[in-house]
Length: 594
Ligand code: ASP
Image 1 (cartoon, rainbow, N blue to C red):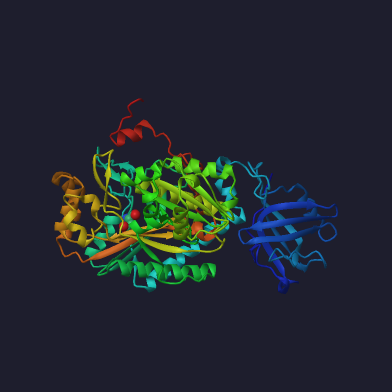
Image 2 (image 1 turned 90 degrees about the vertical axis):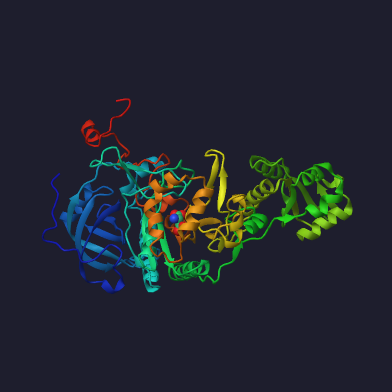
């Protein structure tokens, strides 16, 4: 088919802009056919672009040529129209649509491009599979809801840039072709053509560069930056993702926390009209684990974990006393109104606890005539009363008890708390709650690597008062680190950094890294530490997740224009793909099985 050109036309409006005030104007619109309705004498078309929808009318009596031409149009064809803005007939207005008071009566129609049969309807009610939608992502991106997410992402980024600039930060780009930056994941490697046999690593984060910028005296740095981590993709992760990365000099924990709080207060008030109050609550890691069984608690509801070990120590019921004698704990949560849970509900909860490595749970429904419970007969009345008191449990409630080693009990009850929170809809939609978790352990033992590894990264400063344990009992050392958690999801983390060579070397030693290895990996950085490094601290926020929460998206894929699939592939381009022998040869590479 021969298509028309727009050489002699200029678009006067987009498809979302016309209002009642425009009635009588001649306009030129261009866009996609969202839907066509043929009523014989008259054809209606919803014309769509990213700004909205406008109803256009092709009336045989008004313009016969266009009306006829419209007969061949299909959904998603690209057209241009010239016509007069008119009022819709009384009663035909569409209050759902910003352009719903008007329609455009067409005088001339140009067909700019036709469309093959699309793999799914942009306007369709029946949804295609995710793999199909990802492959034809450019069609899915025509959908207003997805477009809205991406546009909001842009606005959030813009505002972050504005707020941080106002606070004295400057955005600096750091290299992508660089050396490994340890953040606990595998690197994506890029072979060098010029120096064969050598590889760049794509940054897992700009960590060392931002610290070097502090050495350079930049004082306040930020970057909205892509990071790359080659991890096995758990549910909602992306191998390339975006961080709001920051670093500041002459500052401690409070300084970083304050900047992030200012940023979030600003962002939530302008973008969502939501008032957050500063300061956000803070919990030390250990405390969060004891209270919520999680280092990313959703504190919009209570149901905190309570230690009832002392009440049960004298009870004589072996299941509890054995655990306590072995150094374990008995902890419980009180589910308000949970006495109505069915046997099946309780079995499911038990299954979850077991999946967390605990032996199981005990439960007690508080009824008007006493406990209905899996343990009632083992516990005397005064013990039962003590438990009720500690938990504030009353008639109609359900007490859930787990006895195990501390960590197992905490994590098992913590996950139950979240599950029950969901089940009972304890969270009010449209509410947001931030919390800081601080002082994580500095190191943890990796049985895979048979050495201690950094919980955050090896440039995190240890807490001064815990330094004496660094060499002998490294697991006891707490870090000057902090995570920021929003609605039960970790959205960022950072730390005060080590800024002296001596301490950095001590931490590398505690990590079991030899002098030679450290020199090779981080020599440039250790040198920099000797040239006047100021005390500094920083943080990185997971930008994709923050946007996802702010727009209410379920998956990170809903806020990234071209996301990777679960298998870390790009569904649009089919990357990663094979490369030719020539290209490999240029890089000095041969494939083993080719
Ligand atoms: N580089 C860290 C990360 O990517 C954040 C930081 O410590 O600032 O998690």
